[in-house]
Image (cartoon, rainbow, N blue to C red; front, side):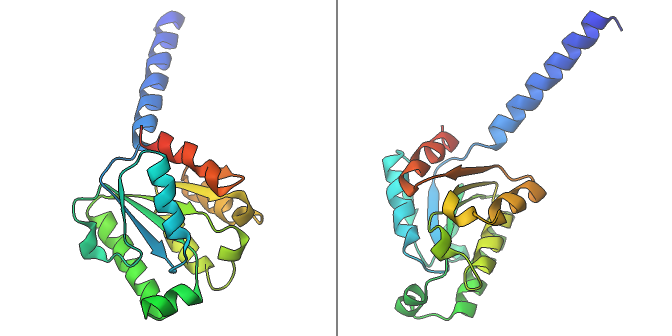
Length: 182
């Protein structure tokens, strides 16, 4: 094979690879947004989707049966004792719900995106198992930088080869969120 032909073949393969990568990073409607830990951040996720022009249904306590015809599940992790109390469920029941929902999404081939909006207050012993389960099941992550000061999400993303976007403020999540649905 001539050097020109080799270069041409290599260029074609690189373009094909980039095209496949771009397609796998895309998400589509219908979208279901839920919490993992019952924090109020799930409401903010709904507002961000609305601002980005993404039609979505918010159900903080979504179960496997609520996936319906959803093509994307946006999961918003972060523990809240007030949120769990208001929902009338224990931390263990919430983890069971989240685990079952993520398993159902995987079985139905529903793409999962994780939005960690709560920063440092949604990290630590009470939140990190929700954070880890949500992140590991996701095809992409958008994280407010304050929640990744210790590299928790970045390290997990690198080890699992999951695309991650870090933003300074919650409002800045609109741009990368919208771009994932174009």
